[in-house]
Image (cartoon, rainbow, N blue to C red):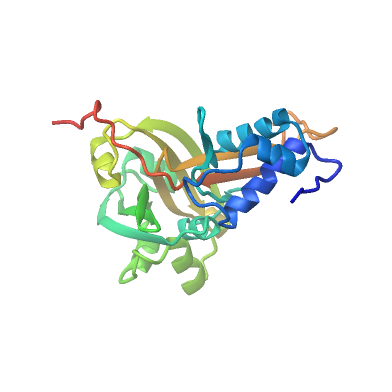
Length: 276
């Protein structure tokens, strides 16, 4: 049955949107073959060039993959979740339609390093709680977190189930300590041996490291965190606005900043063994 396109939006964008919605609704599962270019062209009464542009968009997003001479297939399922608003891991996973959980691999009081002391506004060498967790989406490791908290906030985590609860939830819901702001810094790094082992990826694989400082009222630092995301499982989309009067000496305003979680498992690299 033919599908009618709307006016005011490019045809290829509408085809992409329709296919994206159909995949999101489960009409086709991962690795299912999509209708051919000629079938889609007939359905929407558009040229094959238009269909190809639509498919290229979805391929660049990782929603589908194409095989020469075979056609297009459903790739990774993913859902956008906004990071313009400060969120915790459980909120990110909920928005992505995935169940969040964690494995605590380290929880000890230690001395603050220079980096930690600057981030938390505490004296270097003072006592802080370091908490290391493997963050899981639907039971699969997506990230490795190292979090440092000043003693006052660290003690509030005593006896809590940090495999299912997040720090944000504990502080905001149980102790009415709001997280009012945060600062992010992103950097691409090669996976250190210990983190690659915990995430089940080859040593030296590219990771996306996000440093974040979470702040409560009166500019009090709640925690400093280093999160190491598997690069095969997450990417970021940045949407900028450009309208008359928008541009300033600080640049264009951000309309949306989203993490894209993907469900395709990484394949081991046989030519890149870990350290002996």
